[in-house]
Length: 521
Image (cartoon, rainbow, N blue to C red; front, side, top):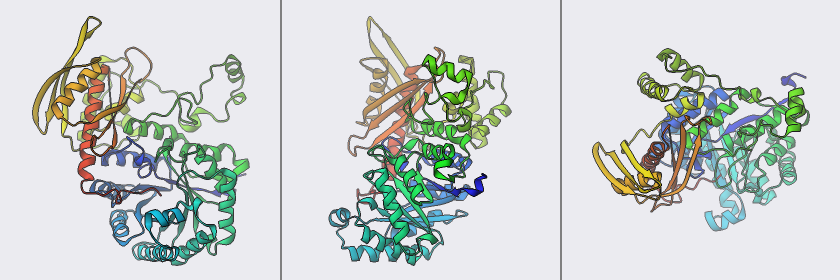
């Protein structure tokens, strides 16, 4: 049976919007653009590039992505009000296929406590705002936030109203991860059967993972007639996250006999997408994570190893190569030239300016002098961007430590172009280095998470460090990351990277109220 005999499921990727709401996952414009390029290579149908009203940075990121990425529809999120919708259109209008994605909550609990509206008032708002959005562009998505806790008859009414007003996609979010698969199957089936005009639009679902059912609910919805799923790379997102793109796509790919559906995803780009997101955000996936986890294709039990050696299908339902997990081959070393390095960057999904390639090449040569084997993961860490608005730059770090002395760190830091230095003791060398930096910057930020992992598990490997800090005033979690063959240097750089991200985040969100930042659809 050819793929043209299966139902096509659109993949709406919201890693850059809902995914970025995951604590510590904040990205700058260039990081978002790099990830958007990779999502385009992956073959997603829609890239939700951000929430343009949230900040100038988010607006510019959506606009930049809309101007460059041509292979996918580009969506901007907007609450159901004219200001948000116009701002979203102003950002996505540069796209070849722009989408305005507007939303409003429909459940009684949201109506009563958050929106303070009647059902009639909400219905009018939803319909009128879809009509307003339609005056700017053809492709309009409407989301009924908290749909799974909404009175069904009222939901039917709202969905019919927005379809009549011009919505081309209607999204049914399980905003708080409340539904179960059987329940959600019937939920979508009933909408398919009872809403007039539903066959003329795209019926989408957006499932959160609070009970660990995001992927299961999304797949149940496909069986019930949904033809678009909203998801994120690695399942990142609000609270427990979203349905994971890689899990949905590979479930459809492996079990076509059950779902009778296909996607347009280039599955060989899945692992690369996962790795790029990890390198940008510093948020690693658990080793046993389906599809992209380190152990997803590992076989340790003797009986499993024996079976796989004799016939892979005994314990593998898909090949590692199918999701882009070919063994990394050593292709670069200290004698490699700039042309080969640039070609490698392109193969890994990076499209850098000449001066950026030059800067990364200098780092590559320095690393090659210290480390014999250079792998793809090393290249990823070399080109991981620090924030374009760098307030702080680490110039020097030196630590004295051992089992007979108290750790002492000496640090030099550029702050707004001025060289400053300080020293500090600590419980260990990393703690001492971070304390010395904090003495200089006086940020009052608190380190709430610290992770070190080896890029390739040898003693000469680079240490990949993630440091998550929490703003003392706003309680915002930001993750910085860096890699170096010296763990203390990597830790100091990761901490400075987090401070830079926090600085720009606070700069971009200055004056924004909590209400303005509420985007949980």
